[in-house]
Image (tube, rainbow, N blue to C red; front, side):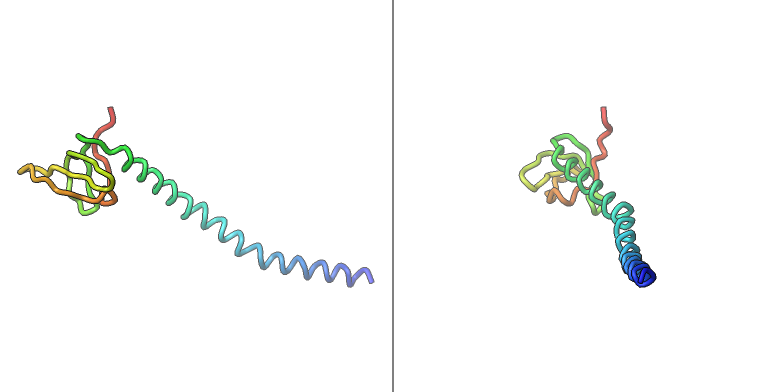
Length: 101
């Protein structure tokens, strides 16, 4: 009688053990891939929110320029050497290259 109870208990643990591996895999995946990506995305969104005239930025296409104006989701850049003005969507800004004071 007691052996059957122990056998049933061990079988239940086997099912939990089979479930624990995928759960553990998801937890590791979250901390190695998803959480760092969310932090990076949040930092990038904050950078876009802080753009102002005079900042030097680099676009996703590798174009470097100086911000002339920022409106809603549009950024106007002045690109050297000829001082050409280009209009970009804010999300095309990859990084701010202005050194922090």
